[in-house]
Image 1 (cartoon, rainbow, N blue to C red):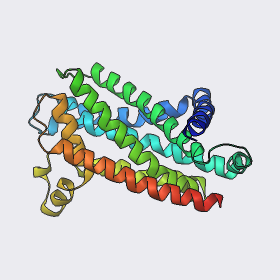
Image 2 (image 1 turned 180 degrees about the horizontal axis):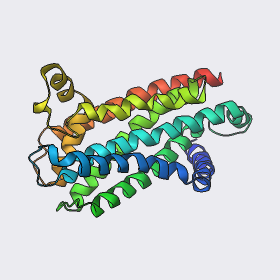
Image 3 (image 1 turned 120 degrees about the vertical axis):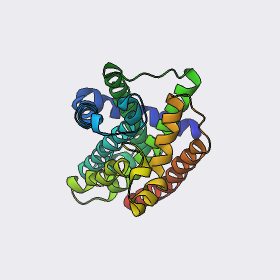
Length: 253
């Protein structure tokens, strides 16, 4: 059964990746907005923002990476919505394939596309002066956090992708997720914020994830931030996966 599921997922993953290679503009579009934000904040606002860091691009890059992921998962919802409306799911149900492999193919495609976008953003950040003395273990830890974060948000994207009534509705859910890093420690220290905003910023998932990635890049002790970040990512992933599978079963029943 597991072999059957893995084989079906690989075949459907190949189909989804071919769609990506035929329209690379989706990856480019995903990377363009975070890069534009990074350019604007570093070269326009960076001189007026005091973070205690020698380089503002070093300070803000973790938040930009999360915005990149939040931008990219909108395309997952869009592709799922297109497949639902195009009758692809009904066609797959008439074939002897594992039903959940259809969703996993979309999720893994999102992971691959977002990782490519993240690499592009990091390369641009390096051109802008980003530097990190972190070793391979720290970079692998950052990659692990970003992969978990991408999977968590992708499974959230699956829900509107399956249940939205319009194409705009399928992708509009990502806007609050893109905005969330602005209410965190991604761009300014939380202690500069007014009371209620600071309380929210310090207790929402993005702040702990950003702080953990920032500490890994700067070789600082991560403390409890990394465990809080992992707990948020895994918790969101589990809940989103459960709701997504429930929505999928309801749609195909």
